[in-house]
Length: 152
Image (cartoon, rainbow, N blue to C red; front, side, top):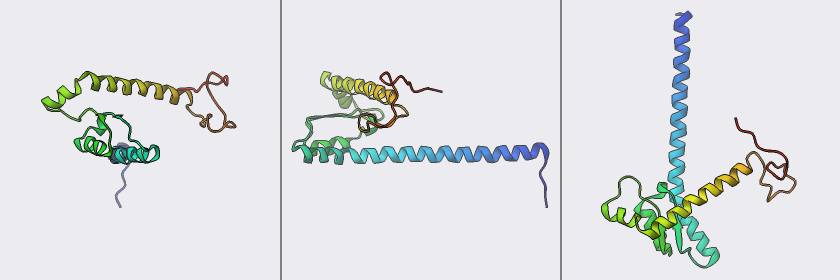
């Protein structure tokens, strides 16, 4: 039986830990990629459900570059969305670049980008708490409770 000792044993242990870390990171990356793919597949059905519930499709839909595929645009237009504002992935062609530089496209992209900051602020203000707007008995944090979430 071969016994590994000393520095060689430490090297073997570090190699095992590094291999596990690489596999863990790969699994996380694949999971994120699958999540993004599921998100793209769920945008049109979500808009379709909104149309069924309200009786009308939204006039405008804006999303980030992760949804930037022609099929997503076409699916939303088929549902009845008048204006789809989603930047394309990669290098768009000349016609698409001109479309993305139009004032109406840029205005809606800026609106969507600004809303991300507002959402982030709301998430930060309620970090580590239950949704206090739905559960009055949940412990809260923020300016009105005298408790602030900590960061590390």
